[in-house]
Amino acid sequence: MPLSSSEGPVTDRLVAANQRYAAEFTDPGMDARPVLKVAVVACMDARLDLHAALGLELGDCHTIRNAGGVVTDDVIRSLTISQRALGTRSVVLIHHTGCGLLNLTEDFRHELEMEVGQRPSWAVESFKDADQDVRQSMERVRTSPFLLHTGDVRGFVFDVTTGLLREIDPVDGPES
Image (cartoon, rainbow, N blue to C red; front, side, top):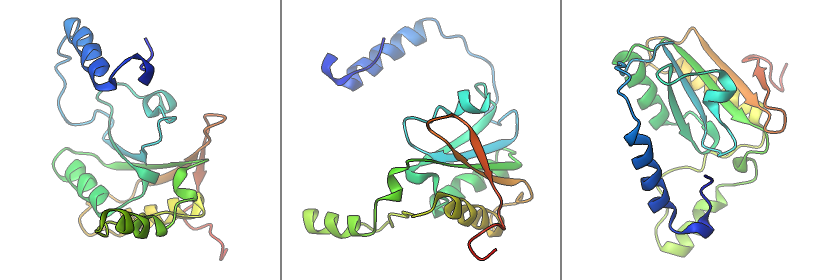
């Protein structure tokens, strides 16, 4: 049953869905360590069904999502825990076409400050070129002193109209 806002409070429907899920739930007996030893960093966009798009099953990976799929300090924190405490070895970065961050600017922070009287401590981390931001995110992962495993870091742009991933060459940029 789809969860639309016209049917009542969304959270109530989510809780009811969880009760139905729990009624048939069986503990899969999994460890918290991802079976495939991979962490996927992706945008929070609701159009990205990462498990379906990547052929993943429950327990296969760690999934870290934020606006834009940008590698921020908090993403490095999560990747560090993922690698050092839970055994991941590979990192997959996924941006996508039609991302809302392509049109958002740091003016957003100024507008928030004007509205609420306090400037956010965080950066918007917007970008004009998804490919270039994937390259920058790959570089942030590869050069982090906190990450043990930086040899298998790959980046992609997911096309929201075709469902296909397009791999981004880390060295193929505007200067090439």
